[in-house]
Length: 261
View 1 (cartoon, one colour):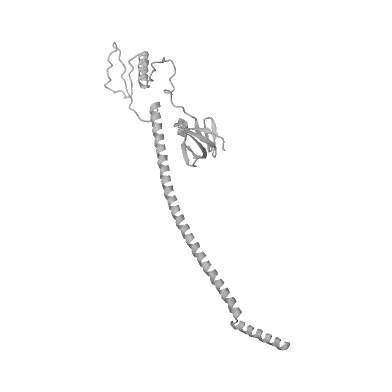
View 2 (cartoon, rainbow, N blue to C red):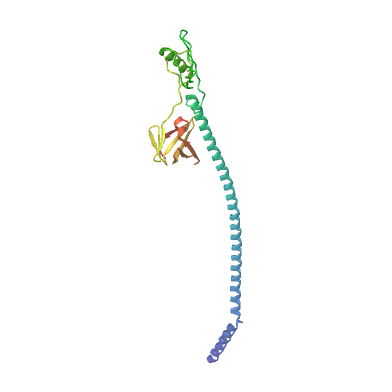
């Protein structure tokens, strides 16, 4: 009885093995169907993820493209404004230098030389010109005494030198008021990549205060030292400014040291 039962079980296992090899076993088909559903589900999720990532990359591309175009336009406007500011600053410097030269009488403009005839003494005879040879144009015939010549020269110097307006409430021997005194000038020069200003040395990356005629005080850092100018960077918004030596010498800008924080 037991032997028959074993033979039946063995026969059943052989049939199941044969069905498994043929792919008709029910348990095999059931599990294969489950695996196939899992496979299709993963494929569908992968395709959705791919589509989502593709959309995100395209959105980032469009966003970056717009940002790059906007930054390009902003940089163009900033470059144009900086060049205009530099040209305006150079124009102001030239106008200030011209005004300074005109006030100090150190103008480079060639002015006509004013000539003045020397007086002739009443008792002196009229000089007879030599018909044989004409005198040179630059030749002077001194018909006056040394004292009269010095007097004429003093008169010419008084006409040439600008008159200082006298204050009605103060004697002439008193010094001029601060409003009449010339603008204060500072010693400023650049040597070996360092700035010497007002008896102090300044170098790159040094923290300073920049003061202007409008009584503004800006916290800055020296970003570079050139041949005839320095560049400073504002600590508030990191914008840069060019300061020329002439501006420092004339007191348009004043530099003060500050402790770096």
